[in-house]
Image (cartoon, rainbow, N blue to C red; front, side, top):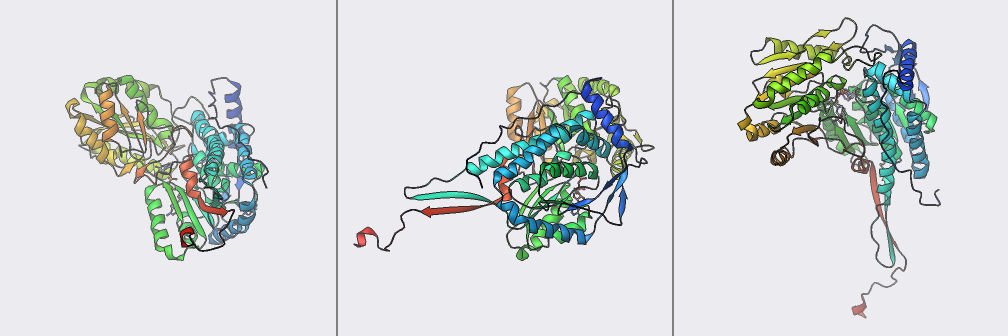
Length: 541
Ligand SMILES: NC(=O)c1ccc[n+]([C@@H]2O[C@H](COP(=O)([O-])OP(=O)(O)OC[C@H]3O[C@@H](n4cnc5c(N)ncnc54)[C@H](O)[C@@H]3O)[C@@H](O)[C@H]2O)c1
Ligand SMILES: N[C@@H](CCC=O)C(=O)O
């Protein structure tokens, strides 16, 4: 137990490496990618700190080359879900009793392992398994994950330091207990950092976790578990299982000791899990905490006073970085007629220089979409736009699945502000543009606000400060992360806490103290030093 009030290292954002052509850092990363590409991985589940293998082997697939064989993972079933829950519950007391400094040290060490010896390996795994280019892997798997770990340790201590006042003769204390039971982390394919953050931020606070990563992110999930193991995370604290999502959720959410859901993924899956929790509510020991960050239909809203080049660049980066597979990706842009020709010209000129292909070549800005489902979905939107009287594909539109799942960055122009691609989350490299009459600025703000059920991210571009202020107010509830004269992606831990409202989630802001508060249950303690020995008030004599 602690005999000092320790100060944790001051968290600063991990510097993003530039990976300039020919630099030692890019050579080292690409060499690691090539080595790992040749490996034949056999990836087990990790339950109670042990590798668990089954008879069901699922081949790993790389989006940029779906025929390439780089191994398999072992798929589990419902007995593994039970084992993971039992293992978590068995580890709970000892983990809970460990002083917070001991827990913090494990996650700070994990951050340093990622910053140093594991950086290339985790980045390369993300490039191979999730098809991110060098820069996108670096800002996600290395920097954002490191930031989550370091900042959460700092936020945890700030939270612990928040204590009530005490009158004379008493000492009031707040004790930040972990939740009573086990927590369930369900993570998406698209961010290695998110998949690492969801289970670790709960564990850091003394919780025990069953973690089900996406089956499209198994390789980088395995490296995360390797890192946590090397950092000294005790057995059973985080149990990683590769089991079918729906059945796993049904089993976990029916368990009496289920205490919290930390989810990131699509809106429909989150809603189905929330309903299950509601249906089981009388069966739990405590009311489970529910945190979910889900889909988006993120906008760029442009005022006539904006700079066309800045707008065009935000469109290209915001919509097409990581093939538009960020929940924050710009997928609808509203451009005033007076600016459209110039914006269109710059977008077209920039897209002409965009290269698409495997992340192995760092000059490829666009890589593959995650899988066949995503490829088919994007292709469907593009083909329907090509045939529609309401829409026109003005850039891109080619899809090629001969080697990998490649979809060209595509811009759809429509005169119908309710056209399907303007309203629905596509989660691919498709940006819809609606051109409005300059005089309709105020009505268009309303349109932006009301077009989709989501409220995740959005940008406003304007030089005119009155216009900025007007959009700021009109779009108050349209985005949980709101950007002024910047693209709507790329939130940084500690700088722009991330999350959305409406259908986009519970807005508990990943990587912030607000989020950590959801995974503790406070015990208020009052200790009285001179305890009364008579019931009578003074005036009763
Ligand atoms: N708001 C955010 O912070 C944020 C961040 C990243 C991704 N996302 C969203 O995630 C989605 C893309 O990720 P995805 O394709 O991995 O999402 P997804 O919903 O398909 O999968 C997310 C996780 O849920 C599991 N799952 C799938 N069906 C399930 C079911 N019926 N019951 C329980 N679990 C189930 C999956 O195996 C995976 O682990 C997009 O909608 C995107 O907007 C949101
Ligand atoms: N936090 C990331 C998005 C995460 C969702 O996929 C961003 O701000 O771009």
